[in-house]
Image 1 (cartoon, protein in one colour):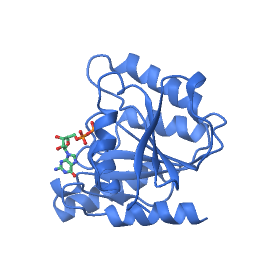
Image 2: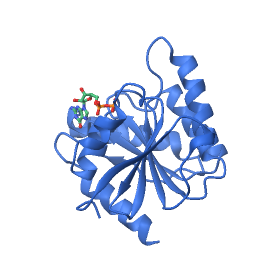
Image 3: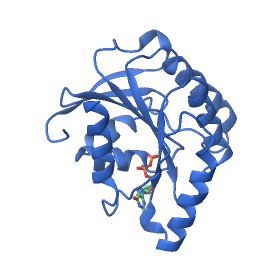
Length: 197
Ligand code: GDP
């Protein structure tokens, strides 16, 4: 699935310039610095994708990549960063709301959470938005290598307790580390399964 091509195809900063819904879309979202670029790189086995998304001017856009003609990976803008937090979150919320509303081709959103920090209020707001739009999502913990096994278990349990009541949430948390490769095969398998459904 990830062995072939992975090409940047589209950037959108508003509802008006989303690409046509030609393929299944799988999106990745998370706070700035959560490790989204690293995870997308680890997942696809190349670093051009996330580098593109980190290009100035691209960081607040939805960036679309064609993965082997099988699906479109959507790199969503990072949210919750520093001083402009509120304003950025508002802009981000608007953009994803626009994107999510009526986007029939969107199969799943992976919401990335830093395992060291767990779910923060700004993440809760995003989960709320996804829930309202009835978009199915799965929580992925990043940087699991930073935690001791006991700490990771606790983080998994805490995170699960925060999403349990949310109907749109996939009831399983996926711990990963881009640094060690931990959990990446499971993420790939989850995507493959989704595409085969
Ligand atoms: P983004 O802003 O969400 O795209 O995050 P990046 O992928 O650029 O990563 C942000 C920071 O976290 C960088 O300093 C990375 O080296 C670090 N990082 C990313 N993934 C991991 C990981 O799996 N383990 C550890 N320990 N650090 C990571």
